[in-house]
Amino acid sequence: MVSSNRGDFGEIIRQQRVMMSLTLGELAKKSLVSASHLGRIERGERFPSARILRRLAKPLDFEENELFALAGYLSSRSLSVAEESPAYAGRRLDPYVAKVLSQEPVEVQRAVIGILSILKSIATSMTKE
Amino acid sequence: MVSSNRGDFGEIIRQQRVMMSLTLGELAKKSLVSASHLGRIERGERFPSARILRRLAKPLDFEENELFALAGYLSSRSLSVAEESPAYAGRRLDPYVAKVLSQEPVEVQRAVIGILSILKSIATSMTKE
DNA sequence: TAGGGATTTTGACATTTGGCGAAAAATATG
DNA sequence: CATATTTTTCGCCAAATGTCAAAATCCCTA
Image 1 (cartoon, each protein chain N blue to C red):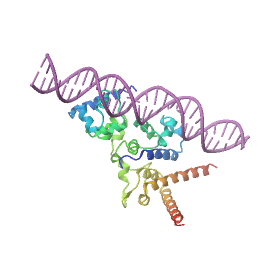
Image 2 (cartoon, each protein chain N blue to C red):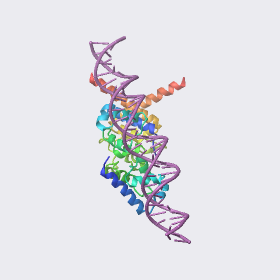
Image 3 (cartoon, each protein chain N blue to C red):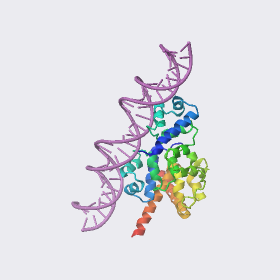
């Protein structure tokens, strides 16, 4: 899992921006990166240079090296979050997912799991018919 | 782009290469970066992208982080990788939640985060009224 | 449903990056 | 010295980045 897919990276950025309830324009202002460029990055048409990446870290509440690792610029070995997520049953928890969830109170985290189980049962019953 | 560090950076690279007694050609081979490009980087005519920088780290016996910091891509604060505390905004990821989620494929994990952000925006709009 | 502001996307363009091959400069070797 | 051989620098080109302005979309409310 050296370099995550570049398309995925844009998705992560967009999700994080939405999570912080920022518009492209607002993020542009905070990060000093043009909104149009940000938009292209989010939908995977452009890939941010290290310079741009660094400007994005703070407004999006990422550690710099975290963001660099997500972008595939740094090997995730140098990322603290990666170590922190243990591998259960052969699978592993995505570092970004871990980060986002851990920002929520535990009740919310549990609720998310509840919703997931509901969705799974819905999906199961749908494929049966 | 007259960042005085940039010229210095090339010097550092050159010094390190000489230190390892490598020619441009040899370093090019080891790093998979063309010798001409390396030459320009060393004398400050070009500035290496993160991709190139990463290829240079190992042959020149630098830590990736270190090299990125030298290039000004990472603030030197990020160099101290001693931060093994996850502690995102003072919160932790519930172990049970981590366990359940990590049993799902990453796409599903990401989707869960997406749903969470939707719910948060719903909650926000509800409290507004 | 039309108008108007905010937000996002697209088009056009300048700048930078990086590779290839040849010229130039060093460095050996006879 | 003369000349191979290696090493560095230069010229040129293709691809990627990033910005500004205009166009398209979305979201309201009258």
